[in-house]
Amino acid sequence: MVMEKTRSSRKDVPRAVLFDAYGTLFDVYSVGLLAEQLFPGQGQALGALWRDKQIEYTRLVTTSNDGAHYQPFWDLTRAGLRYACKRLKLSLTTEAEQRLMNQYRHLSAFPENKEVLQSLRDRKLATGILSNGDPDMLGIAVRSAGLDTLLDHVISVDSVRRYKTHPAAYALGEQATGLPAREILFVSSNSWDALAATWYGYQTLWVNRYQLPFEELGVQPTRIGNSLAEVLEFFPD
Image (cartoon, rainbow, N blue to C red; front, side, top):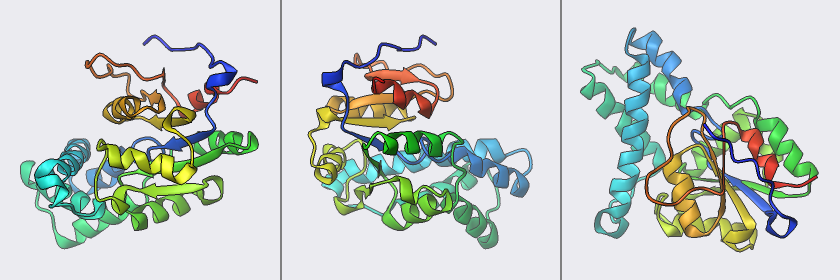
């Protein structure tokens, strides 16, 4: 992968940094470890299909009937798990479902999170999460990872009942920070999220943790990296 290394000019330096949560700060596939214990030989497949269905459901409820079928992210996550188990022909007991859903509340955080967030705080930058997660999910995940003192904003799309990539979801970042999108850096490890945020007007970093190609829709993020630490490349010394 070719790394984008050109530093931002001072006039383009962001004044705030917002992070996607699931996949970016929290490892959505870490739940696969428990899934493997419950369903030997199927943990990885379950984790991947569960995530794909969860995201598919966010798009379905956002685009159908102008969001009339909205459900909280927690409910869509449970629905995605149930579908994935049926698809893989796995017998999901009530106990197994509860254990997997509880694990999703406490996903593993990526190891560089605290150092990067602390560096941004040291630079006096506003920091926050802009996520599909509902407030309760995000609150538990942030506290569990020990990030609560390093974030100024924890923003859930639940307040507008529209999931990313709807513009109303991205507008929440401007509303929370009081800054225009062009002065905000949005960070996501989900390529579709980085693309839509770029379309919206944010400066963007795609954290390509799994060495994947970017979306083929004619637009690139501001920068591509393979670790959250690439955030710091936006800020000249």
